[in-house]
Length: 339
Ligand code: ATP
Ligand code: MG
Ligand code: FE
Image (cartoon, rainbow, N blue to C red; front, side, top):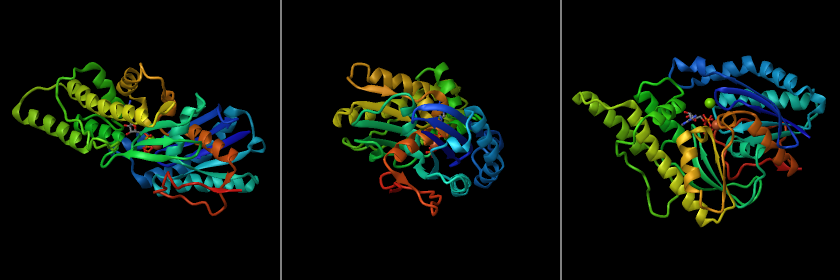
């Protein structure tokens, strides 16, 4: 079984081929970061145009690395949403054209399901499982009792974790995407500023980062006005301490409540050094495994879409030729028809 997957939901043009659900035989990613950098964020029209220009090149690269042809492919999986509609459309149309021309089944994949399934390229899932998804657009605690079924038990009420990182980076004059740079700075700083932690209601597994973000911006701004010197390293370390404490504590509480066997972290912020360390410490004495994807599979890639697509394929899900990009695709209710 070979699943070919296409991912174009944001600013990465990606094609991957996965053998038997877990063996990564090709993982081609073309990042557009350099094109969007000067605008300080992703420009949707630019992203779509780059996807159109890159998709066939990335596709060819994947086939070359894998050393196979379209004849060997079992099914074509593609991110149908959520994401930028123009960007998604390029991938969806490329996947449809390919599947149709070669008479292969087509499978639509939810981008966040993909982020979660990146972990299955390393470890078999054991249910019930709790996933903390922390990415550029999402911060969610998701309970899974079986493959392909997602129950959102908590989510952000304002900014996503990655979004907060990127905004703090901008405040500290770091280039886009700032998440990894803030993480780097945080390693060198001291947790010397007491930023707020948003716990919300006692039983809530929801998150909020806008108060923290404002506190950081105000602190930096006030220091500048009063001529007080504060180190960017210390701001980064103190900000990261707040984010990591809330993420780890809420994940731990949810994991205990639902008695899960595994905790899997997913999305771009799963690459964060502070979060990795914090989670490992928090779960050290618990009888649960905590998994993180390898760094290259934390941010957007098509390998994760292939991993999720494989399970959908095995479960008998098939999309039809009417498959369309859905920028606000819902995780709990998505799913292709079972054939
Ligand atoms: P979504 O998956 O929600 O649609 P996205 O695809 O844009 O959003 P990802 O590619 O999963 O998001 O992750 C990108 C985000 O991860 C960016 O906000 C980036 O700053 C953040 N990020 C990446 N590495 C780190 C890190 N080491 N520390 C903190 N944040 C990071
Ligand atoms: Mg990206
Ligand atoms: Fe993503």
